[in-house]
Length: 152
Image (cartoon, rainbow, N blue to C red; front, side, top):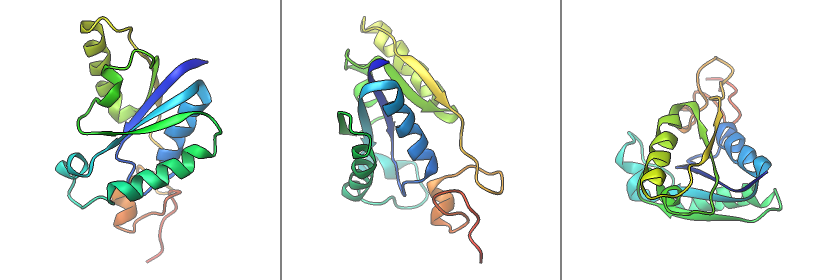
């Protein structure tokens, strides 16, 4: 059991993939830090407008509360958040597509003489059609939050 795990993301339109990564964090650690991207940072790289920060934070907190363990949601404005500065964090949970970011975080921690994080990689959850479950696909009404195809 790790002391403190960290996860980070936009967590727009909470879906099964988001739930899997958060569930894993709570499953392996006594407490969890959840980095939630600011509106400005979240919208910098997206083709569609994300849900406002307050609503995304509320959805993340509602889910996190179900685990009955300590957690905190921290607004982040870059790709690294608190993971490069908090020495109490000893584990990071990432998806396959963000593994490189975790390795960059460990390189930064090494330079700062902070112990490296154990990296736990979660496979990308696939929808009913074999494509990834994503907020973009939910917004386009291709799939629902559980990955089921939406009938048109």
